[in-house]
Amino acid sequence: MDLILDGIKKAFWLLITFDPEVMGITLLSLQISGTATLVSLLIGISTGTAIALSQFPGKRFIVSLVNTGMGLPPVVVGLFVTIFLWRSGPLGFLGILYTPTAMILAQTVIATPIVMGISLAAIQHLPPKLKLQILALGATRLQMVWILIKEAKLPLLAGVMAGFGGVISEVGASIMVGGNIKGYSRVLTTATVMETSRGNFDIAIALGIILLLLAYFINLILTQIQQRERSR
Amino acid sequence: MNQSITILEAKNLKVKRGGATLLNIPSLSIEKGEILALIGPNGAGKTTFLQTLSYLLKPFQGEIFFRGKKVETHISVLEYRRKLAMVFQDPLLFDTTVFNNVASGLKIRGMKRKEIADRVMEQLERFGISHLSRRSAKTLSGGEAQRASLARAFALQPEILLLDEPFASLDPPTHESLIEDLEHILYRTRTTTIFATHDRLEALSLSDRVAVMNHGMIQQMGPPEEVMNYPATEFVASFVGVETILPGKVIKRNGGSFIASVEGKEIEAVGEAHLGETVLLCIRPENVTLSTQPHREATSARNLFVGRILKIVPLGPYQKAHLDCGFPLVAYVTTHSLEELSLNEGKEVRASFKATAIHVVRKGAG
Image (cartoon, rainbow over all chains, first blue to last red; front, side, top):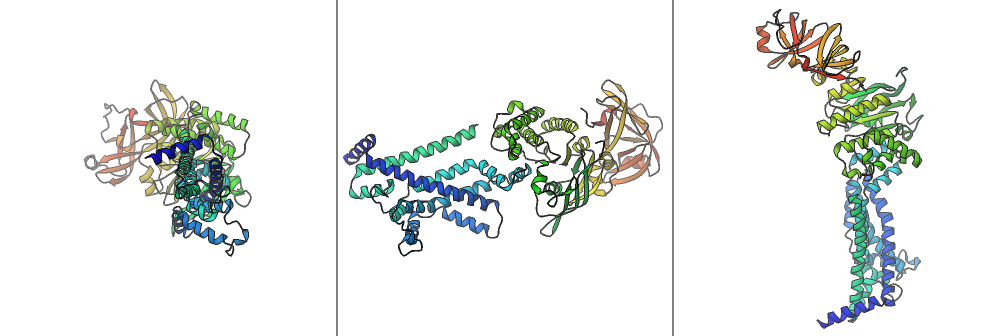
């Protein structure tokens, strides 16, 4: 029991004093996962909407692929991104393996299908005649798509939550393609794994608390936006 | 309306899906300011027709001309669509305030904010929903939502308004007040309108012309009283011809009731109407009593006319008798009394109906 209490005490001390190492790791985590989420939003929402609005043979198959992608194991993503970025791999010439850029790439691969799948479902759930009504109001195709996306903003927000939540808490891919290099590619999850294995439970608990708080605050903000939208 | 200008013309419109023809309209032209009602049962092709006219349903065969200009060739689909406004059966409002909803079509056109605000306010007031302007569209009742949807369409000041059964899902009182308001607004704006409905009375009170549709085709088209009194086919008769509809001119009023002149005959009806106004008198066949005795005016039925039986159509336990009383009249007779009165085609009878049994439709009363 002492181990835990001691750990928690030291963890709070690290947090209250804004320990530079802990803060650096947190900031890097936010940067990497935030960028990856942003990129996945751009790709996921546009592609998801395009799939939802178009009719083509094999649409069902594509939708099932996207849905499968929503549950991609991060370790598998890490493996393939590593192979691609390996010096002799197809993208080896980029020389970005074991860099934050590689981590952004891997996390984008993880988040994109999540955002895409939720966008696809969100757009498909709008009343089918809404599209006709928007066109009848004189909208161009682009205006129509934009209005539909705005109409689906609540479920799309859920997509943002799920995407960011997925990558900020992911560890496998980050460690494989980032290498957990101190002060360079060490993020909350990879640091937690390392400190735990070393028996430094105080730092590990501090990092864990930050991870929990981050997840909590981001969800709180998004939930609040959702609730305000609903009550208006 | 003084000068008739053809605003919309459709030629050889055909929509086919999986071998079935959903729509087949050889030709149709709409005059500026005209109100055309499309009536027919569900699946008759009314929605398909409206969506084809607005280029929302593709692909289709045929040509559409707007003010003589061929759409796609002389005028782009977008440009054409921006001359129209369409209201669907569901209000289909956006998840924002009522104001922003009514403004949406104008925003799409990139209009200036000040001008948008003016136009939106005008429409909100016109449809009696100014007080809801800042409310979320999600919180509106069915009637309020449909008013917002109509306001959104009218804010565009469309050259042609397409209405796809916009009142079908409303409860009767809401339905009635909304149709009354729409009638006044259309009367004032003189907007060219094509509206689909399965309600005959709605078509009667709003339209200048009625097109009865079935199986994707127009079965008959003409002024409402003509279509309803003289159905051209059996289908039209079964769908619309269930009552006699007589245009009459009000020549005398005495509190709560009036006397209208119909083809030179005087018919008394209960209801409000101005002197000199032309109204439509609707008489259901079950409210018409036939007799052969010459003196039986002591009934409470106040309208009594002598007529000749033109045709008798059997309808199970009833027979439907078409009479000529100087004006057309249809009456139901039980098979029993048909035999008792020994009625047959060509025979002279007395037809009577109460002043209270007449449904009075006023056209464009404002």
